[in-house]
Image (cartoon, rainbow, N blue to C red; front, side, top):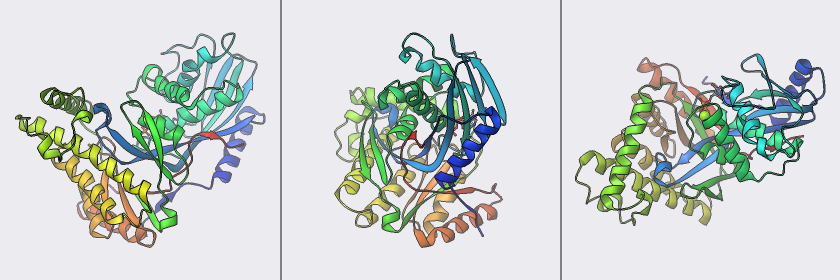
Length: 399
Ligand code: ADP
Ligand code: MG
């Protein structure tokens, strides 16, 4: 039987993190916090052209057990890494901590100017995460956002959600030195149970839209293809440059500004065939997100299911053919899922590896997963990993 990885029950995960905290630090945690990973339902490679995307928080979360101390030192332990790392809180600067702990210390650093009268006391933080690392489900944002929630609450900083989003982004880009656009942190902090968020990358405003999969007898199956990411940096930079060339040719600041009249028509003025295809993807994808969100706002997923499936499939096909960011593993997973009866399937994330999502009737999940598994085995591809995720609540205090 194909194994489907569901997230643990929250109360069990909270108990376990509290126990690990006691064993590590020999004291009771002051509070328990968590933040979710995310998956983008639709709206890929549009963020850097001020487009729209539609992420949801997944059930897999990063849990943080925390207390303040009077040591002036932050002690960070991750169950996943098995390490404890320490750093003085006062005078934290990028480079002071590296590896996974930089995502944690980076949040303290990014929030430093919120502490009245300089740096606070110290912290003991126990991290226990269930978002798989590096699968494209944003374990890094889950970690940062859970820490931001912990520090904000315990120190009564009174930061707004948007300040915590900015702090998490700053921690990742400036302190940990990794590139991130902001979608992940926005989703991890702002998502609500049973909803997705329509995120406008022009101004980072969001609207919560109903996405009640369970109530409609549906599941979102996440397939981590485990395809090795290769050539990613250069390919991404090239796509961004091509998108900018498309906008320049059409005389707009970003492709978001192109009035939609069918993506092909809109791109007629672009003679370079590659720039044409790239622009066609972005303009079409933004329109697909808009339509997808309108369907969800208007009624139930079931009522709009046929069109929702078409939009998911069209998104993948456009990423494969026009944007050329898919790889065989992603296409094999998408094709096998569709053939086995999924209501639409698409690659999610930047591409060149990573995960596929398939919208599936709840009773069909096993069949679809095992069809994908067989398709991979037949082609001698590494075994994919399957996750079941419900649209979950954003970051916050659990106890
Ligand atoms: P993704 O966010 O898609 O999972 P990233 O490369 O952005 O992939 O982030 C993964 C990194 O985040 C890990 O290499 C590690 O440094 C850090 N990380 C995330 N969760 C944890 C955790 N529970 N314990 C330790 N480090 C973590
Ligand atoms: Mg990440």
